[in-house]
Image (tube, rainbow, N blue to C red):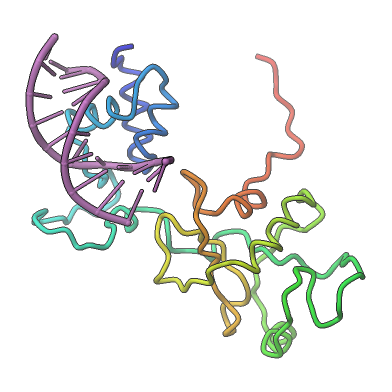
Length: 202
DNA sequence: CCCTGATTCGC
DNA sequence: GCGAATCAGG
């Protein structure tokens, strides 16, 4: 395969979106990630600055240790992400009353904040998500690494758990699924296949 | 061991 | 220009 305009275009687009070289290679097909990286360099876009009014990068001499790629796009803004913890709509009445539907103890603070609290953006209703996925999340939240915002990296699940206004708030922090912002379990509930979508014939 | 991008260098 | 091999790192 050769680098046709189309392929280069795809490469540029995906690279600009922060996709990894291997992912781009997979998408393009017929090339390895090395080929992609090589091309990226030859195109002179090794720096993922791409667009956005974020030129800066005056002296690229040092390596700030911290991953600069993360500052590009992903991370941050967990609030925009869908919230887990569905409402106690249909809770399988089999657990202890001290635990919520996820088997997590309900803290007093949490109880206190909910009635008074306001925002808590609309959450995907539990019954729209596969029970398996939810079950997985429930398990995962028990073993989550409970990271703080600043501890998040491209490799840590950025799924927020709990109420930001409470001490009982943290990010999952488990190993992310390749190319995704969440761990496998959370990817499962975050990326649901479009439910009712009809493919139109062309 | 999985992965990431960066660099080199024969082609 | 291309990309496998290699390097350096998480």
